[in-house]
Length: 141
Image (cartoon, rainbow, N blue to C red; front, side):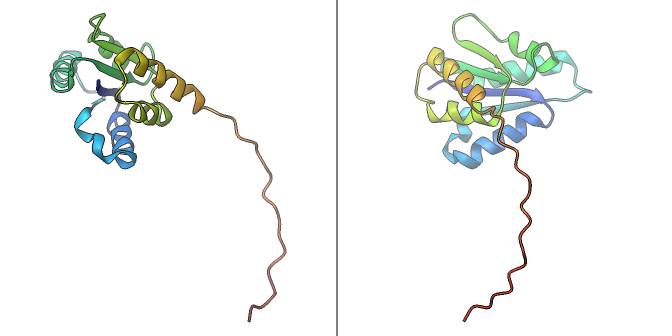
């Protein structure tokens, strides 16, 4: 089962990990989260990310990050080795839950599941007007 890392702007990574653990409490050992703050140096972040990678490497790792081109994504891309580490940007709750549902699949399949989960989780819902109702004056016996 591949390891899972979330690298995102603070406090998103930790919050997403907490949501994952809420729905899948047994997964806490396989998920690492790195919150990237504006005060953090890239060198310190890279050292933290590499230490996390060593903790979760199983030997494959899926890294989920928030925004393409931003510091967390750029940091995540530094971890890619071409074989055992994949990075996917655009992390959301649907993506994480889909990954955890299929966590036993190989890395390549899991990366596809992550993208599918993320895109299927973005849906425009029908907007309805609140309905005005008359107060309930009936009594129950």
